[in-house]
Length: 356
Ligand code: TXA
Ligand code: MG
Image 1 (cartoon, rainbow, N blue to C red):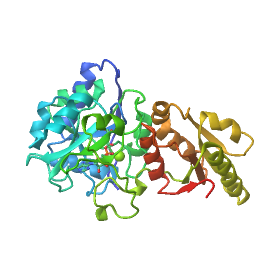
Image 2: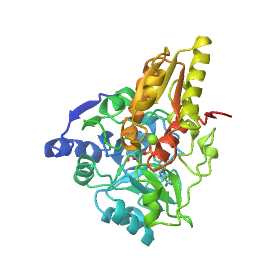
Image 3: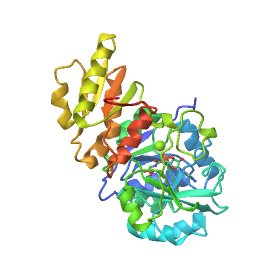
Image 4: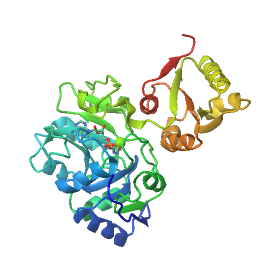
């Protein structure tokens, strides 16, 4: 456990951040402290990326394994060359198209990058976020900002300041409350240090959009249970987003999957369990006659809305105290691939296919 510290909360205008608030937060960063701040994806837990002790505090506050490296956030393309060497042309092409935005690039690191930020690897992950508060904070701090998602390890990523406080109150110095984040799922992570480049984590930029710039990009989701240390690549840990209840993803065609969700729910209810469903809007009426908690994700056909609500929905449904959560497979089209990835991780790989 960490010693409790006073966590202050400052409200900030997400569109036009007040300079005095940003200056106050930047002073905390420069002094080696921890500041949670909104990005366009999720809230980040920030510290100076060039200060090994400050980075160590991030690991401590989150209870994150030291083997899982952290993304450095920049506000200016010049900062990429401060952190990285031998930056390949593909990085510049991707940056031109997607930065600022929900894309993280893994490149070779310079010695200035503290070893703990990179978890001892020869690489560093870099992202320029598309959020006025994040960009202003990095600029005012004068250093790149190391920031994992501002949740405790293995909790869903926070999309509001309240989620940050739920997990980290008393463990960090400051939260900048800039309202709910609008993308809602984390950045896509592309490793450019291997040939061909690999999408390590699907995120806010779709694989289709990435391949318009990087046609050779590969993606082979590997969901591994067990010790992060044993993993071939960081961030593959299956339990990464696990809620407190057991979650099961139900795949198959729409009608069959919905019927299977009803059957699984009924069986669990008969066994005395409390059941929740993370339901697409169009599925909710078909579940209304069952004694289940329903949290709606938005229309299945609108993955942008579903992504924005996903982590809040996971937190909300587990707070109802259910034992089992069921969710229908969103498919793999566009941003749905990212939503599916987060659901499957939260489910620790439990997918059942209706009709099988
Ligand atoms: O949208 C986001 O990316 C958010 C916001 C705050 O920017 N950040 C975020 O950070 O999701 P985090 O730490 O929760 O996830 C970062 C992912 C992890 O899967 C980590 O293993 C991977 O990026 N990563 C970081 N550095 C890496 C490196 N050098 N090589 C490979 N993967 C790396
Ligand atoms: Mg995270």
